[in-house]
Amino acid sequence: MSVYVVLLRGINVGRHNRIAMGDLRALLGDLGYRDAATHLQSGNAVVTSGEEGPEAVAAAVSAGLRERFGLEVPVVVRTAAGFAAAVEANPLEVADPSRFLVLFCSGTLDTAALVGLDPAAYPRERLAVTATEAYTVHEEGLRLARLPDVVARHADGAVTGRNWRTVLRIAEMTRR
Image (cartoon, rainbow, N blue to C red; front, top):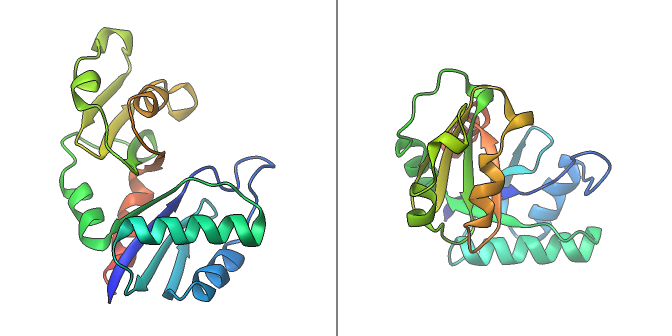
């Protein structure tokens, strides 16, 4: 059995894509995942499964959300080890966890294009990238952040972000 982190993009933001976390846990259980636990109301879950990898879990959860709730929601999945590796790979200082995002991509990122960005164009933001994650600092807060949208334009899959505090809490949840 493997532990997976399931990240839903755009859940419970404003009036769109509303889903109670109890309903999400029930759906995950009905899909055959065990020990489903959620964190916050933004679509963060940790499950145990014998599935054949993150892509299979993402496809099953996406189909389940569509069938049960009528929601087209991008789903990004990492193994517990992959999620821990993303935490360890962070090359940036985290001065304020609420102004620090990890952007998780379901595919890969165009790292050459992202590394080639002119930092002067984003004076109060910083960026570091791996093949499937981007790490961003936003000194003026997330409301004014521009880099997450830039990262999403350089991704071949869905991108969803979590602040550092949430990332660390999810990492704790994977250590069952």
